[in-house]
Amino acid sequence: MQTWFIGLRLDLKRHKRRLVTIPPSVESNLRFWGSPENGRRGAPLGQVISYITVFTDASVTGWGGTCIE
Picture 1: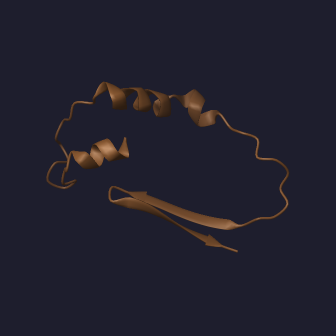
Picture 2 (picture 1 turned 60 degrees about the vertical axis):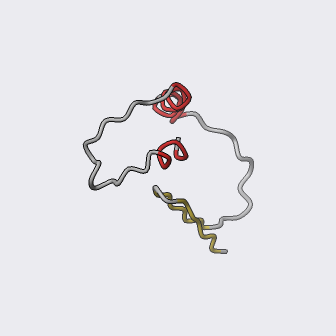
């Protein structure tokens, strides 16, 4: 979805009211991530043996993260 959106080359300030057509390949992803059931679904991670702080960030231009041990 992110790759498709970046490919539109929209300026978020100038095109903030622009309507876009969602292609079928992206529509299925939106349906999955928009489903409340998928947001509540989890996966067991196992027994906790230590804690590590991780910070992440995502934007229209990429993503990043920092791990502090």
